[in-house]
Length: 581
Image (cartoon, rainbow, N blue to C red; front, side, top):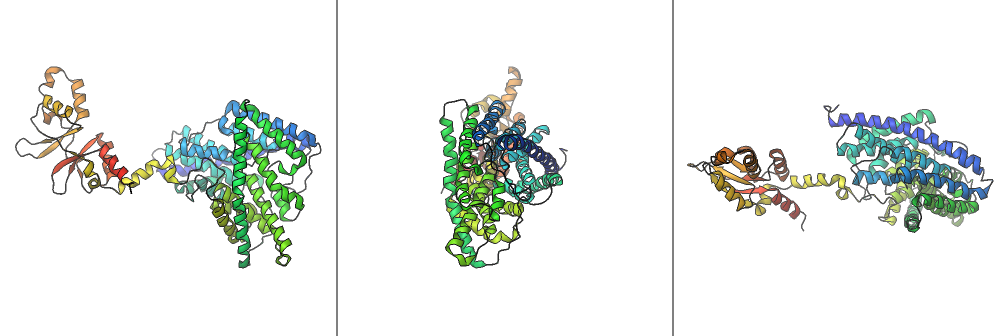
């Protein structure tokens, strides 16, 4: 396989990651259903509504409310034990951990992470924690990608790509959104509209494979049922734009609450293993008074679309969901923020349409489209994933007729939310990512020539062919040169170079008598192949440094003379000067 072209190998590995992520999504979904059955349905007596593509919207609120703090606390305790005993990096929303692995850890994720993340997240969500499935499956898929790279001993750049493929394949599978999942994976790494373009096609391949495996057992319907509403009134774009602005303004309070809760829990002086249990206990107390805030919550979106929730529940749910999500995840539990965030956005969209109809009855606006675009707008603003937020929402709802108003909501949401993001490990763009530092060095060096570095280059030191070794050593010691240029004794013609590194090797390997007989022409290691020209770009010069294992090279000027040598240091000075204004 090593002999295959890089792109071919990437496609093969992307298919393998897609297969593993697809079955991983099935396994996670199965474990989550078991946890929900015993902890939520049986113990709590709580049957939450399901979105139309996953079940019935009929629901039963918890029968024994006093048990909610107990069960959520136990769920947090189990999750805390799994996380902090076996894999502390699985705490919190897993997408951030996958992003951190890509940027800062060379794509390395320990093999145990997918296993612990599956169990800990299933217990957190299954016991009623307000968390989503995207974080766990993103870290699970990314972990499989990294594990595959370990098995085949792949280079760092391919490992990082497979981590991205794993994120996209996992999310594309469990959300039945193959295109949106792939876009999410390449877009969520950055905050400033940058994407990981090199990973896009392999990620699409992996996402399609994973989606096909998951869909074969769970069906192909979108997660939410919608009426197929189509946008037909351009004047309403003003209303949608205003919704986007409101959603954007509500990003900062959500993010501050989320990380403020984390900071609060970090200051609590108890072993970390108990902190998710305290978060669960506190959420359980909140749920006694408002049980609508526990669990993933997709069913409440479905009910909001058809007017199945009271105004009081709608008014409290978004803000209770923000607090519940913070208590579940920021306390050290395990789960994603995508699910709770689209619930918040969808319900805020429903509230907005109800307000408009109350204030302006003649508008007679349907609720459903505002719910859909609210979902797209809020997740796009909170996570800085406008393309993924749009496409994933369309795939999850089948609401393709709402692309135009959704874009208006997303644009204004991004404008009013500024740079605030829920993912701490995101970086602004590729220039800010350690994963791409080398790429930009190469790009800059390609735009510079040896002539740009000439002011920082040293004068070439010449010796005759017959110069004895002791004199050569004296020249090296009295200068900072790493190479000496050798010329013909009679004609002065350039014959080659002597490198200090080679001279050291000769001295170490030869006896004293032999050393006294060595002359300059005996030490020439390279001739014209090491010459660089004034017009040669610095990337090519850097390659020559590496190819010939030299720290200095002679410069042949356009007239043919060799008067200077370029060193690695002078190349770096020219590179740094290129950034000066």
